Amino acid sequence: MAKKLLARDIMSAGVQCVGAHETLLDAAKMMRELNVGCLPICGDNNKLKGLITDRDIVVECIAEGVDPATVQAGSLDRPLFWIDAEAEAKDVLKTMEDHQVKRLPVIDVKGGHQLIGMITEANLAKNLTDTQIAEFANAVYATA
Image (cartoon, rainbow, N blue to C red):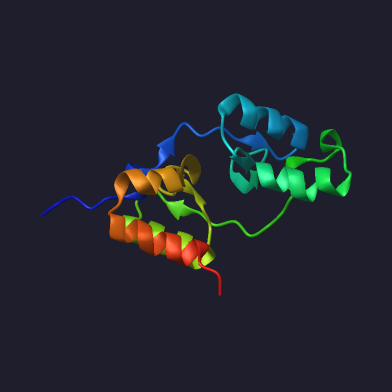
């Protein structure tokens, strides 16, 4: 029997967090340095508190005329979705499709509930079938 593809097999490891008390300017600089458009937000206990995207910084801060150096990353609050590292690929897809998210943090539940990676659309494209990718794209991008 073939080994099941798990979230930990699909994810990109080595994810860096922006601290909840760091500013949006700090987050933007980190994104530039890491060449990413999304960062996990971690609290003082180094546990996942949220996600912030480059779009969040532009739409929720800069477009409102607010100085990103004065806003804490943790203040941009929204529902947070994540997946257990041991979850199967089909569960990763279901979670991303159900919540219409393009990025999904991976948590090692057995290892102290620590953030260990991130699953993005690029990770899906590299690891899943064309049919699965089409299903994902339809669920996340299709408009009602």
